[in-house]
Amino acid sequence: MLSQFLQFLLAGLTVGATYALAALGYTLVYNASGMINFAQGEFIMLGAMTASALVAAGFPLLSSLAIAIAFTTLVGFAMAKFAVEPARTTSMTSLIIITLGAGQVIRGAVEIGLGKGNHALPGLSDDRPLNVLGAALAPQALWIMGISLVIVITLFWYFNSTMHGKALVATSHNRLAAQLVGINTMGVLTFSFALSAALGAIGGVLLAPITFTSYSAGTMLGLKGFVAAAFGGLGSSVGAVVGGLALGVIESMTAAYISAAYKDAVAFVLIILLFLLAPHGLLGAKTSDRV
Image (cartoon, rainbow, N blue to C red):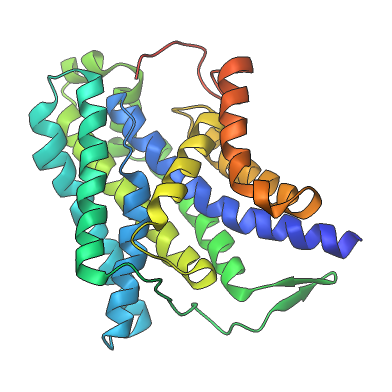
């Protein structure tokens, strides 16, 4: 009984770690601009699909992952520079629609270039499961949780110990004041898009060996990443991590003890309850923003 519970807990934490990376991507862009980037899920898909295509073409695995992450980061940079930045003076609604449109362009390009089928990606190590107190744990799950932990620690150091990180935090608190003290807030916005794309790609290449990937995989992952960010509290990096892990565990326990048919519905039930009962999330600021 305990081993079964542990099995579902580990599965939830594994998937939750990727939700946390997606949620951190939403949080970065939200803090830098006050907007929601609904193309975040497509960054996850693009990273995984690019890596899968490169491996299938004969490239070494690690080189493929590095190229896929760098390419997705470049796409995020280009999206900020050529789609969002020129429209920065328009309404927030228009900017959000632009991110939705950019996401559809990325998805359509991948569908045309790589097809509609599922694609596999090898894991980073041997796929023989490890025994953890009677529960089977895939080595790729350890990679997901370990790399996610390293990224969270690195981001914490970046935001608290570097001038560039502090500039991003200052922009999130008051964009006008940040401009008055000489911070390039447009550069911060572009950087936040590139970094959120990199986080999405890392999540995608880590998760693909467990779940496969396809041109449409980013839609659900992106929505769940948004739910995780909202659950933890939009704008809170710690909340994004807590929200992602919590959502993963709740999904896994629902599939285990209620029905796997309701697993994907949990996220949307959760977001409805959240907006009704605690619209600021678990760790969000107690302010009201129109996004």
